Image 1 (cartoon, rainbow, N blue to C red):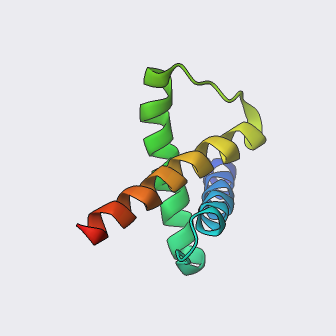
Image 2: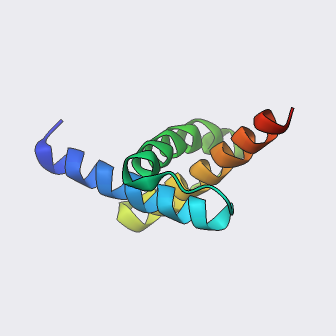
Length: 84
């Protein structure tokens, strides 16, 4: 992976994690935590969305939206597991 791709992945992860933390109230993990949540959310979205027939387009904006939705799903799953 080129250094530029790594930096873009980290930025998208940070933005997506932060947005997901804002949407799902009560989940703020700091910069490193937001990056991890965003990247894991992007991975989760890349697995789930094709099965649902969803395509959010390409580019950075599409990647941020997709990663944010995946991160929201991840945070909601964490919330459900913590309550059980």
